[in-house]
Image (tube, rainbow, N blue to C red; front, side, top):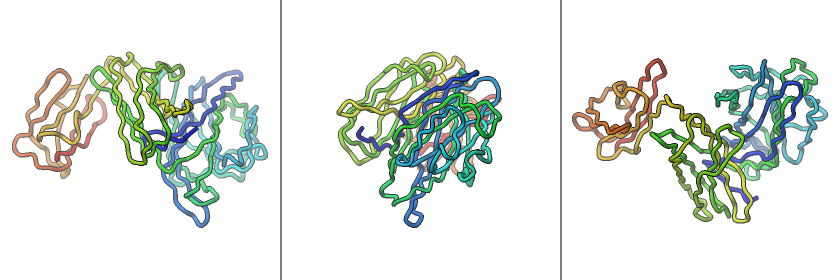
Length: 361
């Protein structure tokens, strides 16, 4: 497949296999994102983020992520937790406890020569609903032989178990990665809940022989159907912005992904994002940024607009009149509003403060 290098789109691993033992779980949607690269002598340090979706069963879980150069990929069978011989020459192993909250573990016993790289590592989880969690490990440093200008293929596998056996635990579910090329620039694909719609946006930095984006949506993060299509504007090494609005999102959870289709019909998927369109879901979004005409417009749904405040970057409150039409609001400052950066904040009832930066030209 031809490669679409994207700041908005990240390259996904291609093969997902679920293995069930006595108490099944599900792993899927594994994703490698490249944060940065830097030279280290004749080698290259690739700083990556890895994320995956896990459907948990009852009890605590453990998950293990292994990285290889594709040329050194040992393709373990995963009938049970792989030994050092079965793993071969890994770039790194990351061990996790996936009980909430997800945490890093100090090692993977069978692989005492591969040390998880804890310096600066962060791990987080997002509850997607229905027992599904998106788990993300960031700031993973991979020492890759060879120059940074010629990054080779890298592959990652992730598997999970419920067993406390630290030597050869049973593998309850597995996501095996395909041949994955890490482009130098990756990854932005965002979604925003509007009044009665979902706005999706993404950015590419290089496009080669790609034809169109198919926007796909799912209610359960497993079965997807196409809800739209956006054409790709030819080959380009310049930054390109794309946007699509789903005007009829489903009630409750909406999962979105992009299918990037090349001229020869081959395709790859972006990462998946989740948007909650529940009946009481709060929507708070700027309508235009930079602002236009010294007025700031925003959308607010299912929250009290009296909790809106506007500040300059020095923290000084800006007085304003507030107009409304449905769920759309407009701030009209009292007095002159000079050009610069401002902070629009919403103190939600019984929840955290939400702040958005808005530029006034």
